[in-house]
Length: 372
Image 1 (cartoon, rainbow, N blue to C red):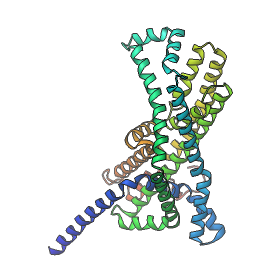
Image 2 (cartoon, rainbow, N blue to C red):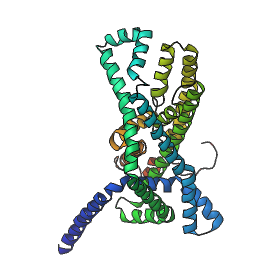
Image 3 (tube, rainbow, N blue to C red):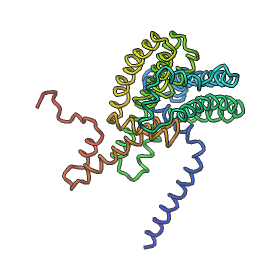
Image 4 (cartoon, helix red, strand yellow):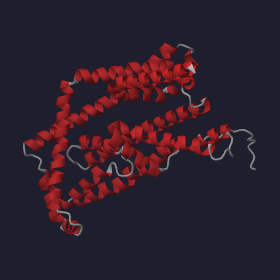
């Protein structure tokens, strides 16, 4: 009796201390999450270096981290700084009266009066919609200008978070395998289930980060190039904006290039409007429709509609980090329920077979390479 009380008391204190630790780490959730993502994504690079350099774990982890900094972290920082700088210029032009978003919308309306009639059928006030769109445009540029000011004021905080991410990534690269083994020993879910869930976590994180970022870079670059070739002002800014919004599946980059094509048609530049429309649908659109299922959906083993909904929900709940966290939560949800259905459906399926089936992986047992 006393031993049972001791055990329960210990478990209660364990839960409380663990929750307190999680609350303590909450301010650093962003750097911790991206350090874990870096360790997972560049784990194959680390293994490749280990095979060639031997068990020099500190050196290999450092070289892997330097490789990550050169090809990912530094380019992303340069891209963000370019976005903010272009946004500041745009905001200054709006403040000086050189750019008038409301006039652009009025010009579209005068060229395509059917738009206002179409909206009226749904009781949508075009004037109110115009004012909201113009305010959103001004607000977006003002947001970028404030971000530039905030970055200058919070430089120490930014570089502290960056340094923390890099520091944690080094130790996760060096000791990640040991930490996973320790967690498997500590968690009371069953070792096979835990290995499956950790494998799913790693698989989805790699797929969403690599896939979405690669698609964002491709679509942003394609959009920026066509805007530059068509001599549209702020091609770099709109290319970066397309890269950011392309994190939203299906509709991402079209948020930028469709209004641009409509405006070009409204001002009579029909050739440029046609070129941008064809390029947007055929090249930019196909880059999303062809690459996203291959790079994200196939590796995460999630249907396209689940990827879309979980990405949107993740962005709403977690901000920019949600484009990874959303599909990750969805994949773990499906993995947990897959295990539950197969293990607890009347005991028909053996536990180990259930785990292997839920993982979506072929075990290869008894596979002779011949058809049945």
